[in-house]
Length: 464
Image (cartoon, rainbow, N blue to C red; front, side):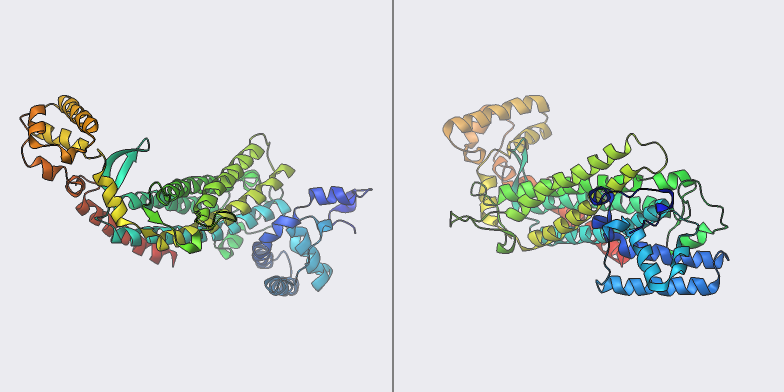
């Protein structure tokens, strides 16, 4: 089979060389985008008088026929035709005859593939943003049920201070809000058109790039033809945003895994998102959380792979850039799958309130409250810190907690203590009093939930 570009060549490559160089095995995912871009391109060729109306109509009808066949899964692609662009061009020629070859007037595969990927990432980024919102909604739904449910807060994986469980969940809401905004902002760089840049230098045909960009829903065009065909920043940015998102998901996965363990027993994962053991019948493993944690590395890998591909490339297009797609496709599927699983995991998990309540009563996470108590009565905080440290040591030596010490023992440590210290040390009091902006105090958590609801409502309308 002769190549569509083969006129200059006297020898053909062996089949295995063709297979190594071909991208059709993966870039066929761009079939919808490639046909969409071609329809806009041929419409522009007609508007500018580059092709006559009857040929534009033939090509347009041929492309629409291919769209229908693609939707029905009836298109067959060939490695000999290398990529999605040449495959569709060959199929178009088969469908409508030699006039199909005129579709490529005024464009190159270089600007064609770039256009396809801009269209693809625009669609997928919007889908991912919707999936982020679903996870945020699941977090808010759980948080509303647990404003006054207490959980130990940790630093260094050591008990630090008690916090509202809702407050802990909402920390991830705000992480995801930043992830959402990164994707949203990236659309400004995604939604620009490289179509018409040609191979690297533009074209001699009197094309109208702004018109084809408008037909495709782009906000504008690349201002430099070299940049248009060689830019993959928008994919790097997408992968970077995705890597950050997956890092956030992975952190919460780690907590879900810990919390569902026998040692914590703070939550139980729904059976739909857990698996058993082939040998130990008692096991219930949080496999979906573990899998998302593991898949994070795939997205990191895609980011570093593309950065490595691009770092030494001179302008403009180089065959190395064929390696830009598989990682992008994989990251899209990984992120979407992870977000969809995550929303379900959060929505269906069971929170063991009593176990959490017991945990915050059996530790020294209220010790900071003692130091603050003394500081509000005039003792320098550094001195108060030392006094409380000694009280903690006394309790440890006696095998009790701070609420178990007597008022006499407190007064021996400082005459600033009075009977109200036992109310101050209650975990719920400890949490409720931390009412500074963004704190874990119940009123602050309720305020945060109101803000979260407004964000979800506004952004839902935007996505719609």
